[in-house]
Image (cartoon, rainbow, N blue to C red; front, side, top):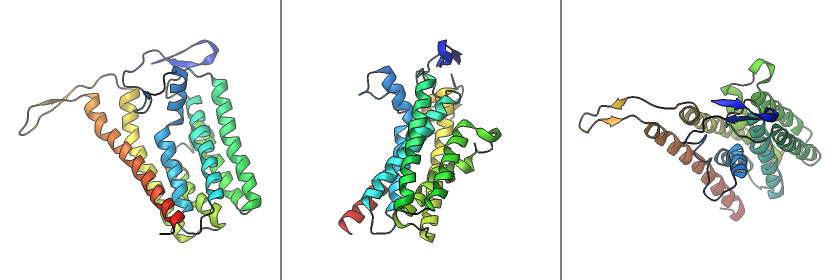
Length: 262
């Protein structure tokens, strides 16, 4: 449940003891406002997206590490900051009390910064980079704000833009071309994002909308187990953690290969 407060900010009227996400209450961050910003940035998923950037850049050598660093920054600004600020601005799914003007500023800095870096890339990489920029901006803004009667707010747009487009754009930023291998690995990126969505959707439902679970598991050779929110969340969020770490380890391995040459 949420209620409106002064200034049009929406805050939760009944805070769930589970929090909106498994990473929402980091023990090292004590400030409530910083915790909310940490949650908005969705660190595990932002790192997964960054991993796909590295995967795309390292598919073929040599790797221009300056271009890779700029591409990573651009995607962090666009997806990690801009998209997530827009998502929270539209409906407050995390129930934060961060003022709307700060979220709008975060979205403007995130998306605007990514576009600025992309414009610079037009002169360094290729003018065809504009195609990827337009697709990215339309996906980020259209998906998160549910524009065009929410026609872009669907699973296909999410997995192809956050997965495939990320890998193919990163590859293009390195080589000013698109290869068959980048498209195939782009499909892998889409499946990674689809798996993340498959696990996170029921986990979000349990954390943000379910107040109680009733039922039990009748075992053949063990005592009856009561069905609880914790029991249902455990495999979903373990899978999410493993997925994010898998992407990061894959990216790290490819990066090491390109640095040391083997």
